[in-house]
Length: 196
Image (cartoon, rainbow, N blue to C red):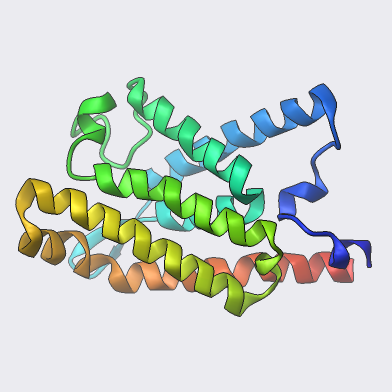
């Protein structure tokens, strides 16, 4: 019963209440989150004419499990790793590294991931992560905002028509599937915890 009434994301169940242990646990989770983001960026699935990474799914799950503050901190740490030249992004090091890569065609999407984590984490902090429909709606809004940011940046580089054709349309179906999957998984974990 205590789990059902606890507000906060899933991670709140595992975090020590205060002190150095809490900080160390948060740091460990953030680093683990960046490793998951790196693996998900390098994992590609063929869905139609383009390769689709699992990164959007990872961002959604991290944000829903960690909440807004730790979720955003994890994404910012991931961006810092990339900016320092670590090959953490999807097409690194093949298509460049560091700030130069981040200012390229994927720059808007990368910034959008941070906003996505903030939106989904905010929803999780308010208990929406226990309700598939509420969580799906929050994740869908986050997805649209992330795609809009990616589209806007890409449009500056290659024009709006090509940006829409190559930067949005090929990813709509895959990203909707990832949103639905993430919005189902997190409430399912809460459900299992309530039974246990």
